[in-house]
Length: 293
Image (cartoon, rainbow, N blue to C red; front, side, top):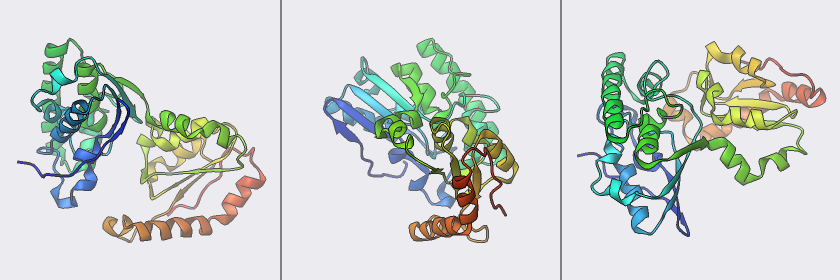
């Protein structure tokens, strides 16, 4: 039996807004508890069923941040879910385009971030291949190479195949809701960021979405950690500066403490005032080399 967690979701009329990480997110587990070989997405199915029982027929589902790599098998194991979800409309908000299987699939790219060892990854890839075959048999949909099907440990593929969910860029949807285009039109600088910026950042993550929507306004990427191997690639993508906020000599548990994170962000901005001032005084310059350990 898995851990019991309290998970919330939003309701507006007959529309439900569900974040899958509420039910099976990495943040629910301690570092030594993370194991995608046993983690399950069943809680996501329970949230969906609860929303249907409240009369919801339209769903916005945020994919990402899960501790799972079960291809949605846990979600689908909830009794009565498939019947209950017949005829609903589902919009998946997703910022990655990774497929279900392969070198960029759910197991090989995301499972190591969830605690999987190299041998675990091979086991998970084999399981995902079997799940893809079962999904194809059940629904006639081959999710193996579908962009976004690997999101949230394969939940994206299961939701698309079994419930006809439609995938859309999560960051673009959020930016539309916030009226970002109107706000950025009068801006001199945009600062965006994430926990760690690496190759995945340029595969549709939130900072890259912000960059694409900012037009000619300079964008600074300020993240907790900048992957050394992708620093130059991030600059080449169009960020005017790429700055790392978190000291590398502190453990992750400390860095994730809200007060520490806020202090580190403030210090990083203060330490790079000259770079930011330079960008503001010469907004047509495309890239500036940021400080980086």
